[in-house]
Image (cartoon, rainbow, N blue to C red; front, side, top):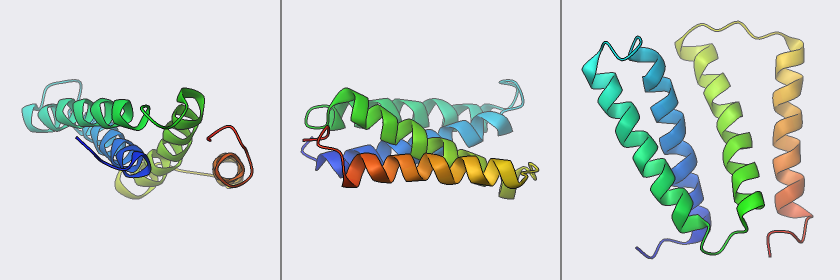
Length: 111
């Protein structure tokens, strides 16, 4: 498959976020549809992550994947599962996003 590495990484992030959110809905693997969505999402995520690693250094790709994933999963948990977030949680997510931006915009590690 010949996806641009950044697109493959974005798909990996979105698939992992969907899979993790569905995992919560699976209620401990007792609900088959969310479980199937989780398994499919994780497979897509890992496949696309592996594609992105052909061009993006492992540490950079993983930092972006995990950092953006954490923020998106937390935001979805806040909206979908009514998870309570306080000011330090929002500040921490802001710092994670700032780190991802610094890594992408200013670091030479990704080249």
